[in-house]
Image (cartoon, rainbow, N blue to C red; front, side, top):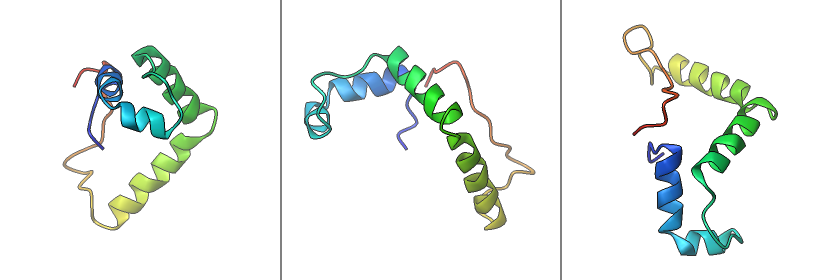
Length: 79
């Protein structure tokens, strides 16, 4: 939602102790931990199929113009 890289997410969490407290964490996870967790969630738990279906539904609803603006994910993790 905030379009952050893993390093950006780490910085945001580091500055949001109340959020960490709410989910029972004492400190923000390292950006590499966030990356490994995302990889696990997207591959092992088959969340990638859910993302594919969500994009398909959004396209069918006319929310996307994939013919002119294809979706892409940048693996560099830079904002």
